[in-house]
Length: 401
Image (cartoon, rainbow, N blue to C red; front, side, top):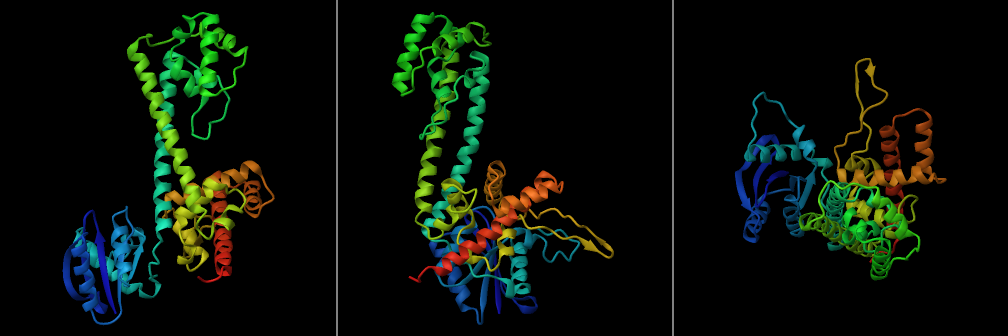
C-alpha cells in the first residue's frame, strides 16, 4: 500500500509518497497544474507497486482541477476536510509549516486512515455548473444587500423615507418600484419644485413607462410628504449622479440574481433527485437547487452522519472521567454554504408551522426552552437526515441506465 499526499496551492502542488512505516518512496517534488505536469504525476503514481491512494485537502477551489484530472485517469483519489489534517499527528513541539512537510503529513494521514478513505466519485458537468452558479448567486446576494443599503443611505440624505412609499413586491427581473421611483424623482426639492399638477402628470407618465398602476390620489400623498421633508445634500448634478449610479448598480445586481436563479432552477430540474427534493416541506425551487448544488451526489456519503458532518451540523461529544456534558456545540467543521441554505429551510418551516416532522421536532425543542441556535441546528440536522434517506431511497428506485 502506498499513500500519495498532495498539498495543493494556486498553480502548483507539492507531492509526497510514503509506504507503511514512514518509508519514503520519493522525495517531495513540485507539480505544476498543467497538462504536462499532471501527466508526469500520473506516470509517477502508476510506477508505484501495490495499491496506491492519493489524498489532498479540499481547501478553496485550487484542489478541484487536480482532483478531477486524477479521478479521470482512473486513480484512487480523495479530498478530505483540512481540519482532519490539521488535527492529525501533531506529535512534535517544533512548529514546521512548509509545503513539503504538509504533503508528508497528508500522506501519513492516508496511511493511518486507509480503510476510511472514500473514492472521489466526481460530480458530473451539471452538478459542477450548479455548484458554481450557487456560489455566484450567494456572492451577488451579498453585493445586492450592500448596494441596497448604500442607496438607502443616499436617499436618507436627499429624499428621506422614499424607499418606504411603495409596498409592491419585486418583479420577476428583480426590479423594485421604489428604486425606479428614486431614479426619476431623485431629490425632494425636485418634486416640490414642480407643483402638484406638473408632478401628477410626470408621475402618471412614469407609471405608464414602467408598467405600474396609476393611482389618482398617490401624487398628492407624495407631494404632501415631500413638502415636509428636508434634504442634506443639494439638488445638483453631483447629487443626481450619486443617486442614479447607486440605482444602476442595484438594478444590475438584481437582474443578474434573477437570471442566475432561473438558470439554477432549470439546471437542477435536469438532475434525478430534484422531484423528491422539491416535494419536501420548506423547500421551493430556489432552495431545492441550492441544496442539490451544495450536497452534490448524495451517494458519495456512506451514511447519514457523514452528510451531517459535511454540513457541520452534527452534535459534538465531550466526556472525561466522571465529567460528561449533556449539551455540546456543533462542529461547524463542514461547508458554511450548505449550513446557510439549511437555516433558510428551517426558518421557513418555523414561519409556516406546517404539520411536518422537522417542524414538530424544532417546536418541541423550543418548548423545552432550548436556545434559538440549538433548536435551529437540531432542525437542520433532522432535515438533512430525512433528505439523505428520501433521496437515497428515490435514487435506488430509479432504473439503471
